[in-house]
Length: 241
Image 1 (cartoon, rainbow, N blue to C red):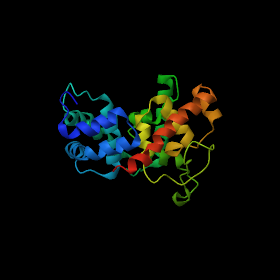
Image 2 (image 1 turned 135 degrees about the vertical axis):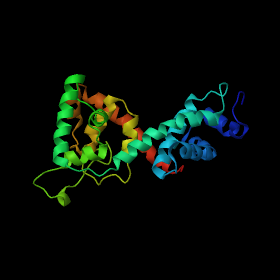
Image 3 (image 1 turned 90 degrees about the vertical axis):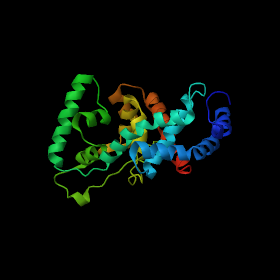
Image 4 (image 1 turned 180 degrees about the horizontal axis):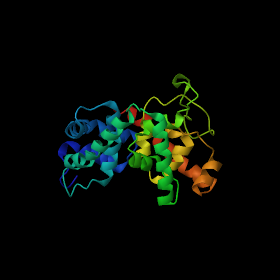
């Protein structure tokens, strides 16, 4: 392999470049694992399984933009994985414990109204988070709060996926959906919010989503297929770390 690609990475990179299958992804991630671990320690400190999943996904994306003629692969990956700092801050806030829910609910509603007027569309949760400083988990608690119901009786529910229509399910075992959500544009984020019932929302049908977003039901279905493909990568990446 010509250029500045390190000799240790030439063979797995060439194999991946020729045919980037799931097996090739797993092989090159295994080879690059010391680099990924090193970048995580430099950028965010001690690695954890959740960040490792995100780092693996970011590494695969970084490989697509790597040019051996312009520099070393390790340097390229370290630069691309700088984004883990932002991810780590976001994940930390997602796990925060909310207080003063009633007041925060009012703040959330006011922020949504303000953004709706500014943007001329429904704001996505990421925009609401930026405006209010709330984490996604906090917004979920705020939306789920019912003054007449004790806290122990409030149950979060969301579909396990997009296929088969809207159906209740147990909360996901990880926050992988939030990782996927963070990678999407505003339109696909909104489809994901409505379709999965993210952050305390009630899941709604394709027809309802189409009306709210001014798109056709077919366009919503296509958007869901793209999102589901990303959600399914959790299982692929879980075997690589």
